[in-house]
Length: 150
Image (tube, rainbow, N blue to C red; front, side, top):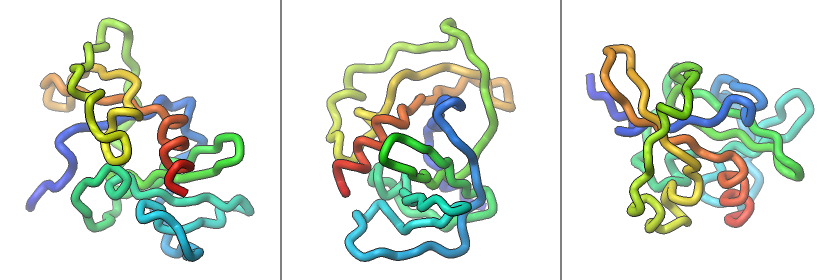
């Protein structure tokens, strides 16, 4: 079985996430949405714009599976959900886990790259006790990117 997940794991600080939901079976399809917005979800009376992280970051498309989740964020004037391949878990880390980000990360095209959305990186042990780097994203930056394209 081919594993077509991204080679890097990304994270969001848990206090930025309002909730995590299953990928919705139906979405409203208003005309004129940017390519990375796949529709709008009525979530208990709140309209939530659903954003495809893979499309937003110009990554290869992937079939949605049982592990596909939507991270829901509520910002002033914006309620959006970010589709992710999976939610692996919650990780607690300290300053000693932080790693210096290479300058190259900040030189990319901010319209498609992660460069504007990454706030820091950490080094953690995975389930096989191997070192793994995780990029921590900022939901405010993602919201700004989304609003700029709308």
